[in-house]
Image (tube, rainbow, N blue to C red; front, side, top):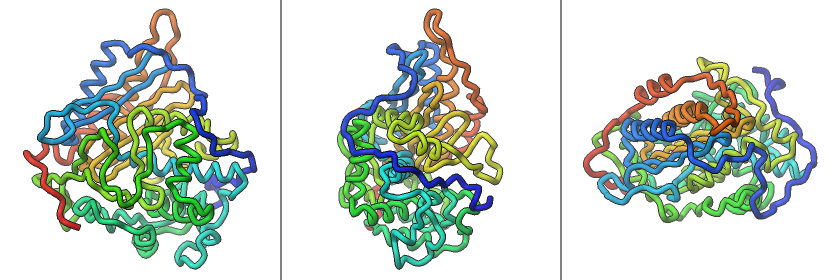
Length: 426
């Protein structure tokens, strides 16, 4: 795809301040009741099956269908060998939030006239080699042509979760790898390097830490009181929270399902400057809906963020990528993986259908969380409205059966080890 066809717009000067308090939703009003019992039972069963296939000890999930009601569920226990039940208010590492939030911060700065999406990263980070010709917008849209540092460091992240990483260390690894790099603006690539580089660039440009940038532009305006960006030195998760697990990674990159590591104490630095977000189910739902309805941005910025390009390869035509946001059918959002946790959250800006999931075992990979979210969305989309109220027609290009088959195929370690081992010393 030619660079000129990539949706990277120079945005206007519509201001966005760092207001504090819940910015009102633009989605249809949520029906106050629960989803019908038959629908809730199907959702409960799907979540329980996904827990088994992912070898998770616990999970939380929610489906919000504004015309019919809502369903939230917490299943399992907080530790692999424990008895404390998981609850829906528990905190977890939410990698699904990081890239969309970082790109939303960029767009709010553009709305405020502090930068343009077409600005060159090299102008914000002068002297850093390997970034010529890359724009801020390309970092968000996945067209910067950067290799993914997770390819090089993924096994270390899992096997030594407490190791502290510098932003430059992560970004340099991605810039130095030419095996999967392409020319800027050529094709879409899933790269954590791009998000980390965006974090470095915006922090340098504003002279502001990412904890403060998130607070000013996302957490505060949306009233996300349960969402935070911990310091890199803080290894624990805000209480209450479940433990997080992952199977050890062998030297060849395969998983050793007989060795399950407790990844709960982990350095947020793995995600780079804009990574490490901790959240809970309610805040993840609020954030997902705000991303879909554009309540934090000007109309022009929202249009730019949700305008997608094809993923290429064998990806179906109903999938695409905008400025830090996935599109699957009519839903917008993101999936994510950090050692110990899988998360995904998506929302339909037209009907308000929203789904959010968390599993406390990351072994199956972030695509597993996406498939689970798709399955729950498929079930929830068919929930009938009460009484004589109208039920929207939501055409999802996948079925419950298709997602179930994909989840089963993605089950790397279907049963956890009897007792998790301590991660090796960093």
